[in-house]
Amino acid sequence: MTEVLGYEKFATAGGDWGALVVGQLGHKYADRLFGLYCHLPIQLSHYLAEHPDVPPGIAYSNGLPEPSVYGEGEETWVATNLDFFAKESGYGYLHLTKPQTLAAALNDSPAGQMAWIIEKRRTWAEARGNIESVWDKEHLCATSTIYWATQTSGSSARFYNEVLMNPW
Image 1 (cartoon, helix red, strand yellow):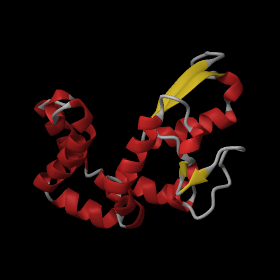
Image 2 (cartoon, helix red, strand yellow; image 1 turned 135 degrees about the horizontal axis):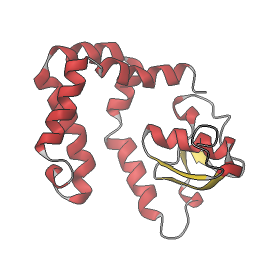
Image 3 (spheres, one colour; image 1 turned 180 degrees about the vertical axis):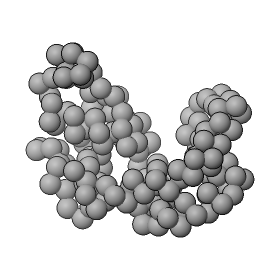
C-alpha cells in the first residue's frame, strides 16, 4: 500500500483468513492504518497450543476473545463466532489435518466439489435468507468449476496446514 501504491495511510478489513491477515497488519503497521475492521478477531496462533500474539490486556479463551472484551452492541459477534466454531468449523480442521485427502476427493468429482462449495455458501448465507439471495447459480457454478478445473482444492486447503506449521 505504501511502497507500491503510494498511500501513506490506509484502512483494512478482513474475515476468515483475512481476519488473521488484518490482525497482523494492525500489530505491525498500526501507525499506517486509519482503521481496521475484522468480524472474526482471532490471532495467527489460533490453532496452536500457545498464543504468543495475544494482545496485552485482552483475555482469550479457546482461541477467541472472552465475551467481556466485546463492547456494548457487539454481543451478537460473541454469539455468532461461538456458534460458528461449535457448528461450522469442521472444514477448517479437515483442512488443517488432512488437506490432501480432501483434495483427492474434491478434485476427483465435480459433483463433490459443487456440494462442498454449496454447503459452505448455504451456511454463510443463512443470516440473509437463502443461498441465492447472496450468490446466484452462475456464481456458484463458476466458483466450483474454477476449483475443479484448476485442481486447486488441495492448495487452498493446504494453506491451513501450512499456517499451522508456521503461522508467521
